Amino acid sequence: MDNISLSETREATPLYSKALTQGAKARIKHTGQIVDLIRVSDHGISVVAFRTGGEYFISNKFLEPVITVH
Image (cartoon, rainbow, N blue to C red; front, side, top):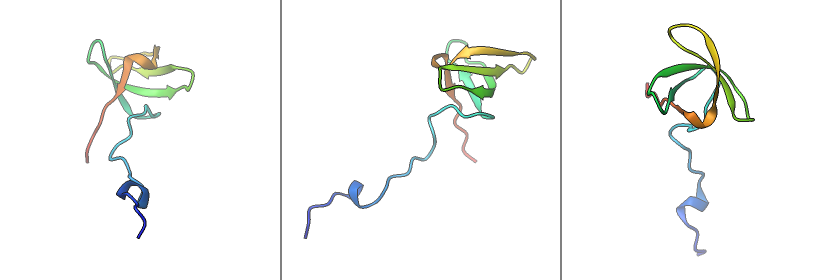
């Protein structure tokens, strides 16, 4: 029998995605404020909407995804 590890025999599926996705919610790291992601760019800039109103550009490095479990 070959020496095959468990990780080689089946693909591990993550429980959640750590990437920012359009239409999801994110948290601003510095302030802790939750915002809606309107557009997410691969170039490092996202358009976010605040609950108080207004859409603004913000760097992706200042955002982290909000993990929700249903």
